[in-house]
Length: 202
Length: 150
Image 1 (cartoon, helix red, strand yellow):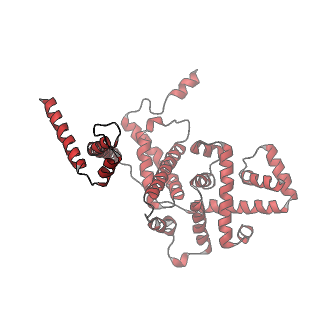
Image 2 (cartoon, helix red, strand yellow):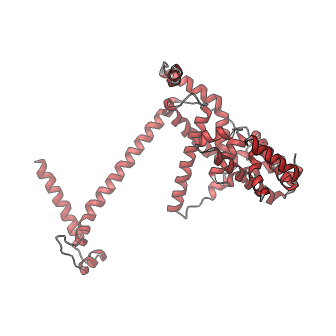
């Protein structure tokens, strides 16, 4: 009975609005880097990533009282980010169906810009860096559902259970999506580099 | 057949997300099947590459959180929503006012016992009833409103 009461006590109880702001800011600081990295991999575009991060902060602050501190704050933010991105993707799709002549070349041009910005110049483009760009491209080609899982499990290092909490789907689905995503990335890379890539690389 | 089934489990085996029984099964199979073992090694290297790639990207952070900005953004969005809604409501009202006469004309059983020929004339614009009618409706409507007010 006592435990139930402890669980019911929300994190914001007994805090003033100012204290809540400080708490929120601290949480954001702690996972800011991970959130930015996650948003970049999910969107494949720095500008889009910045937009959805802003939107996610806005939404998280607005609905901060719905956060359950039993779970990590980062997972909650990831879930919000994913929802926003899914919503944006749907909107883009809808616009494309209504205005089919709208050219998406501009979007493709500035994609992967966050990888390019890491490079010092064309001379620094080694095989490994090229490979990094190709891995990102292969991941961006995946359907959103698979991309979410591969970014969460392989890049953010989440277990299947944690990923299922963020994405809100069963463990078996995570498992099969991740398997298919890896196979697809592997195929993409093998087409470009040949099958020796994975046997020679260690 | 067995290979196909095992290959579907390789990814989860690599992540250590299989049950003890499944894990033993996969391990046994990998011991005897060189093709599946090669597949497993490929997948392991791929995972290593993706992890390396994930870690190699260091995002620049340092976004300042301005609560006033967040609040004003929220307010701005609300204002936009209200504006959009009112514009849509106006458009729907105008459409209703101007297209009601046409609708009345083409519906069977209405006052203007419309025949097919009349409908055709109305829709093709051969007849000048449409603008007259719509004008009359607006005038009647305004008269009624002013009467109500008085």
